[in-house]
Length: 104
Image (cartoon, rainbow, N blue to C red):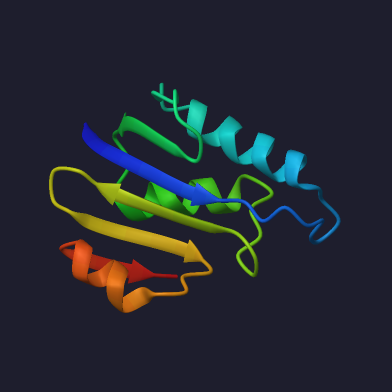
């Protein structure tokens, strides 16, 4: 099983017919399916048999996450490879901090 850090930002405005609370709850429902440590806000540590891309895709497709406004970055702690979805305002800075970045 791979170890992952998940960091995210859910935009506060109502988007695409869902509120912040609805999007946050549905996103965290997917995160919690991995047996996550979540004692801090907007950050989680977990393990999963999924690849980095599969985990990021599940968080995106199976929640109310809105890529036009929200942001998620899933980082494989062992390899440093990361996958992101949504708004990344400083992609060059993020790329400089990880061993590889797939932006979707």
